[in-house]
Amino acid sequence: MKVIFLKSFLSDIKKVKDKGLKSRIKKLILEIEAAKSLEEITGVKKMRGYSIAYRIRMGDYRLGLYKETDCVELARFLKRNDIYKVFPK
Image (cartoon, rainbow, N blue to C red):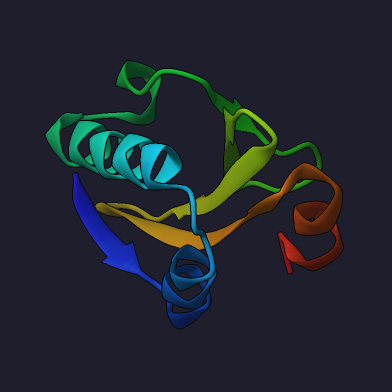
């Protein structure tokens, strides 16, 4: 799949200090790029009440993404108690 990084996602990633977590993010991005559909990605859950919003759990963090017709937009990467305040819009 084609992956698009939103500015909010990139700024969230810059704030992460844990190198182990950053390496897990890189592996997940590679997995998303290699997948042909969202069902092939491990841990993806659809957000209730939204048709194109999904989330992936990574420990205490959540990766928020939007599924478009031919691509995936990575929108946010925040702690569990913060992400649902800003994602999805």
